[in-house]
Length: 194
Image 1 (cartoon, rainbow, N blue to C red):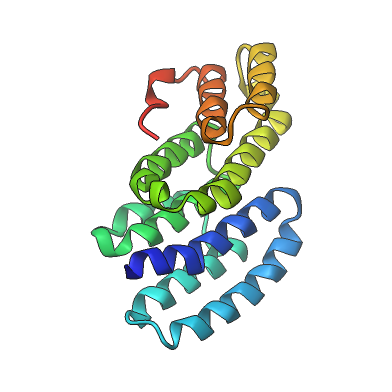
Image 2: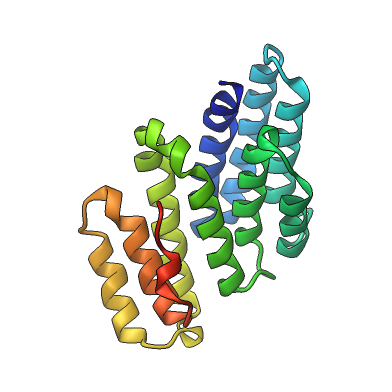
């Protein structure tokens, strides 16, 4: 249960900060300070204070740019065990916000996060609709707009990304990721299971 609380208490606001970061990094950095302060208050009563403190430090690290994307990916691999899945999730998403991580690596991180969170998100449909879907759609739409030259089948990807916006919410992320996989020449079969 404490993983779900940590996910809701730190990862959900982290996701909203990540979405904001895509359009306004400075505002996201300022809001991250507020979020970490509130999370510190929640952590005071938490059963696992160290886990909360690690998550809070990770949020600060991501939004203050203290680590590169590659260093955050190394953090993901260094954190093992079910107790740290939420930390791995935060680090993986944070890595994709850093400018040194390639689109292919960001795609792999996103697929990994979605696969590992699928069972938990099935129990938290509100979090999926309010946090996961908006972030992934915004992330890939912005990535496509800023780095079109890195994609093949540009018109097809553009059409599929636009089409995803009109699909039922449960299908949007999968649809966008299939379009991105096609454009990055990644096997679209990897977009299954979430």
